[in-house]
Image (cartoon, rainbow, N blue to C red):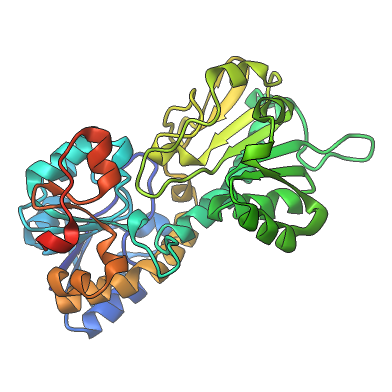
Length: 370
């Protein structure tokens, strides 16, 4: 198959869909890989590395979209890219459609085949292609939050881990999944006081086993969330409903209770955010203030560390891509129900129920239509 890798064009997005090592594996399987000129440069991969791996360097994205049977990206297609997608072309990338009505409409209209990294599952119901970027975003969230707490960033002027004679900051992590766990790794390492809220008692027990008394577990049914939010110096939003819009757990009224200069990092912003006052920002202009609370809502946080992120992402996405290219979409998806869960839009039909429900499309069962 012809596999195309365009340069990412979302603002401050420096990752790329395939590393040179991934290209080498695909070429060894008999596939042709087209990589856009300097597409991997900002992630530390130059044209020569791709050429040595067997890729063809293409000067512009339009030629890649025109020639490739599979398009491999990192972030959701931007409007100019959606306009280039052809009927029956396979798009393999993060989509986050539940928070993107126009993108959904564009992909439906294109009659292309769209597989979303973030809804591919494993046998335990986990999300193996989302996990590596969730881990990166979780770890970055605390770094970013600690920076935003500094006074010159309009924060409270406190050090996350405190100092002799100064108390550590209160960190409230909403969601004990991959984002929450990785945020806790960094926050506890920086010696902050860390609360983790999750609805699952068994998950909280796992986290306590992992972190011991370095965290304070909070089961969502048994807490006063208003109080925890009001006491937080740094709030990390890491709540996820696979493929669906994030629930708004923190309301505008709760924001008013927070201390002047406290910080919110809403990692769930790709799926609409779990804080009512959240709106997407970029690495170039990452923060804004509502009711004296600093909001950091960068929608592609791992793009800030593109080399680490691209390497971690390829480890997870490549085996599925090899299967897709070797077998074709019908066989690859029909043989693997976990891979099939990634199919969101198929030839004009919405095949992921949460996306169909939020935008009023008729849901099409992917198992029946491929």
